[in-house]
Length: 298
Image (cartoon, rainbow, N blue to C red):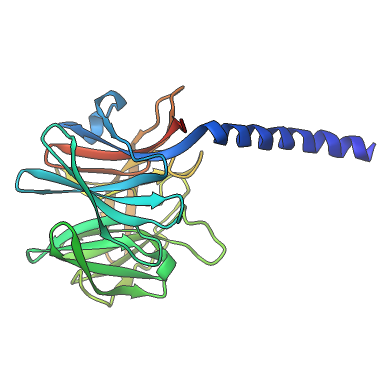
């Protein structure tokens, strides 16, 4: 009786493992980047996007756009499967959204991703995700777009993911998911504030974590204005990691209070080879997202 019960329990798992193994021999779930022209977050449709597909031996994710001299530069995480360590590359696009060039701009002996870009006093900076190095690092651009120098550590001894800055009411607000030891990196959004984005003294918000929800905590791109509304993109990780992008309207933001509401969600199309999307950024006429797509290995 006991043997039959174990057999019944183990058989579906065994069949699932066999199927997944066979599937992985022929197909790859790969993060890619997609771009579209003249589309807003309220009118996103998958048909508008053009895929920028990496080679089969790596993935591309976390696109952040910068515009300079009538060209668009898309900074992304590139992760070669051979190293399983992310680096930051920059893709330059022409007016038809074709790739002109592709170059590595930042590489470390630890994992990098989510290359958040911002400008302060006419200087361009980047805050890549450096959780593996246990701190939030700031880099300064010394030659655009390919040379970046370590400037300083904003917050030490912290397992922070997807750090995103916002300037409002004369203050700089730092949003990041914080992973506690043994905990999830998907469901706890923390907030800090300072008078200077280059400061190494950031005050934790008293309500931290300001969002504790696997549906909407983790950042998914630059926080932006829609008229008078402040919109914070975030990840819905409820179905799987980075399943969909939320657009949350920040209602209250102060040194003592925080609240937001989810206004809309952009999901993968049903019955499609696209199964997840978790970053949204838009500058000028260009919008960039990422997505996991099912791709044949050969």
